[in-house]
Length: 496
Image (tube, rainbow, N blue to C red):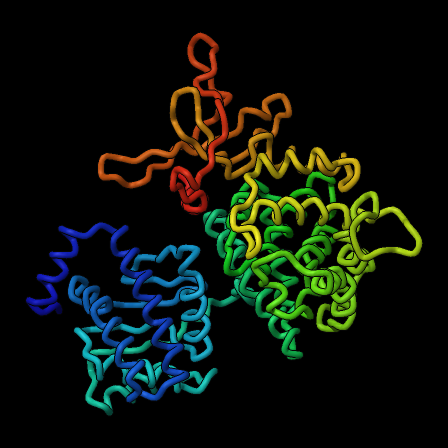
């Protein structure tokens, strides 16, 4: 039964705060817990640095408890649920979500309920008790609750993690009820995190969990087979800070979409996906200061860069946990910078035709690299500029047929392009038209705001006509989203 204070708080929440606001505050809460959990692993509870972070976190946490009455943070599969509302994470918030999910699952903690406002002592006791739990111990939830009670804290209760019977390892099976856009988002960010872990472990000469990467590649294949445009939309994400890993995942997506158009089997698609994910594996041997250099490479540094395909092959052949490695994968990694006229690298003593895997990854790698900001090129090419450059170089650098297939995938107006319509509306290209006759008439998300100033997303088909048979909308030209302060990525997360 609720106390009068809790009743007032809940009434206040119902009347004043929409679900969107709860989601926003929830995301902030997860970020604060992430920081606190990490700091608790570095500093002891009396450290001054911890005091500062606790004070910063308390207001956000208590604001939520104040308006919600009680606050439940629960894990369901790979989601975080706040008072029965599933939180949607952003690009920036994914690391915090991933960390919380991982740490709570390791300790078999499925839910924590905060029944009253916290103070600095209560919050610190909770964080340190949580992070000091032994991983994998079944009674951890009860143990955590009891440890807090022993310290006089009765307002925090922990419950055990719910294991869904029959749930596949890593949650890689797609339920028919799941939103494919949400599934794609999970696979995308999970793969970025996994490729980062794999390369970091390889660099540190530790065991790398490559089998997980293989399962994620299989999941990506399934998604591409179902609807390639969903993952292609995710490939518009260009995370400057995580360039190496983000780039590898984007190259995988583009490569798989091309493989689908070429009629590859699922097994061949999986091999192509893994090859694309690991195509820059050799860069793990290049010093960080060279990879992240903000200016052009000198001759010695460029010599190191040119060796990364060969190093990638050496590392791949020693990844025994990947199981049987098809020669196509080895050759694909070796050749992804060769170019059709062999003007690339590594230099060959005897020229031979570049393999199909190598040619596919060349196209995907070039396009994503050109359209992504880097340390030495802060402003990337627009999708249209990148395609124009690639078309100009199609005979020397790329297979013309594969490039044509690639352009049909991303469209004359590539996915993620900001366009001006003849109705004076702004739109973001969301999905190319599969009919070659209408390549210039993709599906577009209109960029507009409602009366409250919130972004509104309306999907329109540019082949739609009015009663007189005239097209309702047509593209006039493409625009630079940076000049209009439009975050393209947000339009691919929750399409209307």
